[in-house]
Image (cartoon, rainbow, N blue to C red; front, side, top):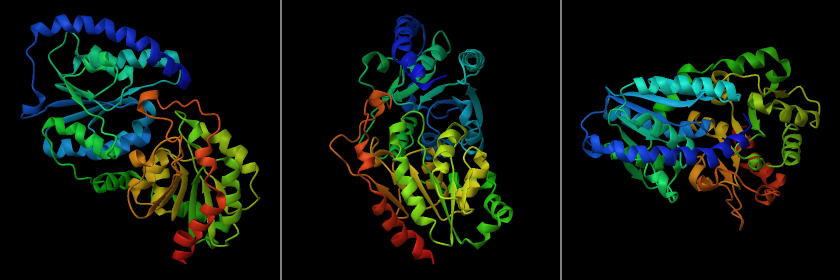
Amino acid sequence: MNINIIRKIDQYISPIVCRFLLFFKFFSSFSMKPIDVLFQKSYKNILILKFFGFGTILLAAPALSKIKKAYPSTEITIFTLSSNYELCEMLPSIDKIICLNIDNFLTFVITFIKAFLGIRRRKFNVIIDLEFITNFSALITLLTTLFANRKTTVGFNSPIKWRNSVYDVIVSFDHSRHITKIFSKLVSSLAINDFALNFRPIRDALLKHADVEYLANLIEANDPLKKCDYFLCVNINAGVLSLNRRWPKEYFNILIRKLIEESNVGILLIGGKEDVDYVSDFQIELPLSPRIINLCGKTSLKQLIGLLSKSNLLITNDSGILHAAHVTGLSTISFFGPETPYLYGPIGKIHHVFYDDLFCSPCINIYNSKMSRCKDNICLKSITPDTVIELVKKKYLFKTL
């Protein structure tokens, strides 16, 4: 389904249904014994709700690992989009996956009913909503808990008052922290007070499943790449939730034209299947070079992670691929503007974030469903190709030669 249709449904239909269900929840709660999540000694089955954001699931992974470490016998199930299945299958903290397919309305209805009935049959005693303030995840929480055995529900605080009535435990969304620490704060409601971040188990798990020979096989199949000793992945895309996160295509063109002049550099264009047309049109505008390889839509997630783990640098817009590179330990250069890097930017000295912090930035956030009315993303246009080229050559490219 079109993302804008999904937004409209979430904005207008879900609140009506949720308010209706809250009426029944109010009366049904009298006959149920409340559970104080802060004083539970064990958690047998936990349901995690996280639908949108491939990269956000990766950033939430350390928090889920904390649950597993604190309660090893707990079974963690995630309810997510089918497009996230391959990633969730790799994460060691997730035991079971329930998927929702939103390719079209029919598949949405069928998979929703199947998932809902399956969840109702399962004896989850805790439901954690990792979505920020989407109405759909609140709806799922209500449907799952209504007229069922008592479950403790945890979700983020919302300016929408009725939504806060859905959850037993309301966690403040602390904008002063990085999103990874916000997720850690959320799971602290399960009496987990360890806020230290550790991506190492996540990285090891991804690499265990990854095709780490993908780049070597690619080089073997392309003779011009055998002359290269520096491989640069370039992602000109951004998730469909906010396309104005794209650094201008013509800027990427100038950047690649300049970097391909270095005879030892191989440039790999990457992206998902939904980005194929955008990248193909972009490639036509580039100079003909056998050292520019278009891999967009041609790699599985396991191949992509393997590619990132063996490459030298990723240049990318704010996207899920950025977070995948961050977790695998690849150096990155990223562009932020509509979104703030203080909340979602990669952490570490090997990463460089371009963010001009203009008067209008950031314009997308959890309160407007990542939807901006901006028609001219000057926050990204102000980041010139020359500035990026200078950084690449000074800090990354020539430093390795």
